[in-house]
Image 1 (cartoon, one colour):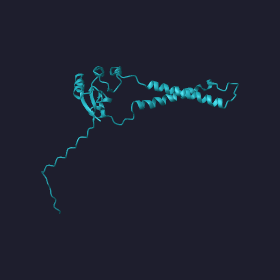
Image 2: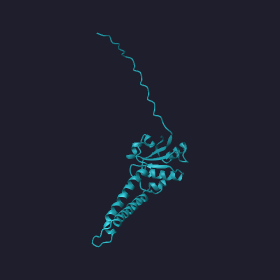
Image 3: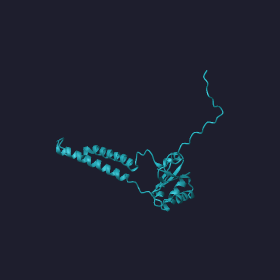
Image 4: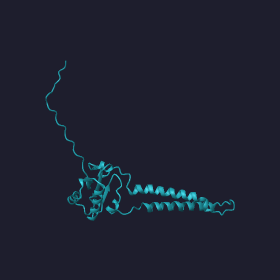
Length: 197
């Protein structure tokens, strides 16, 4: 029978601590609010204080929040209108070209009888409007975005449940870590954290 060395009673060596993941540059400040009223009031105050790169993340739409933040109206309707006009124009040009280039005398109708092509015009208008809306929305929202610095906040998961977050980017001219933190806490924010890229 082979002898085995037994080291009973000896303490196991402590496992080495895992180093924290390296942090990039400071992206900005992120703060948690508990209610829609709190985040609405905070956005109003931050806008009045001169912050311009603030954003809000809420689990559901908060009526009027975009005005409290001072956001400009979206350009999306104008882009969709452009897509619709392009679709209608291309439909008219196509039907005009094929009828004038190869005219057919059917029931004594004029070569370009636009009335019968209204379904074509409608379909092309709707098709290009929808495609423009889809592509433009992704472009304006910078999608797909697989990672964002705000995901580093310890309570980020609450942004789709019951948490209301305000972010201020470090690139904002008014950004100062201490003053920004103090203002957010004064406005009733919880879990104010600097997030890194």
